[in-house]
Image (cartoon, rainbow, N blue to C red; front, side, top):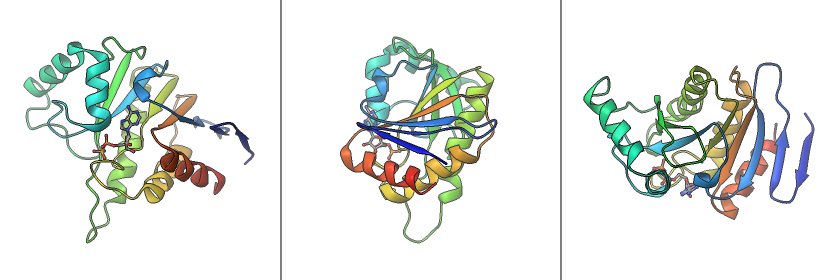
Length: 188
Ligand code: ADP
C-alpha cells in the first residue's frame, strides 16, 4: 500500500469498505469532523487527559448527555471496549463517541479490548452516518498503554474494520505519539 509522507501528515488509502487513515499532530478538540472519539472512563462523567479537554471545549451539554446515558441504558457505566455517542456540544464535531480503553497490564493481555474500542467506535460512527472521524491514541495516557503497541493495534484495527466512514484521522498530541503512529502506518 502506498504511504504518502508530508509534513506531519501520513496518509494510507482505504481498502474497499474501509476508511483512509490520516495522521496529524494536534489537539482533537479542534478537529472539524463529523465525530470525535473520546478516551473516556466507565463513569462517563469526565476525567483528565483528552476526556477533560473534550468536556472543557464542548461545554456542559456533553456532560448532561452523559448523565442522561447513566440514568437510562448505562446505569453501571460503559464497559471497557464499548462505545456510545452523545452530542458534540460546542465542538465543531456534531457528535462525540465515548469509548473506554483498557488500563495497561503487565500480567494480562488486554489487546482485544483496545482493538474493540476502535471497532466499536467505528460501528457507532456508522449508525451516525459519520464520514470523517477523529481518534486520539486510546489508553496511551493515564491508562499507560505503551505507545508503539497502542499505535500498532489502532492502525491494524482501523485498517481491517469494514465501515462507511471514509476518513479516520488519528490526532496525536505529541511527537512521540506521532512517530509511533507513523511507524505503524509504514509497517502496513
Ligand atoms: P487514557 O486514559 O485512555 O490513557 P488519556 O486522555 O490519558 O486517556 O490519553 C490518551 C492519549 O490522548 C494520550 O496519548 C494523550 O497524550 C492524548 N491526549 C491528551 N489530550 C489530548 C488532546 N487534547 N487531543 C489529542 N490527544 C490528546
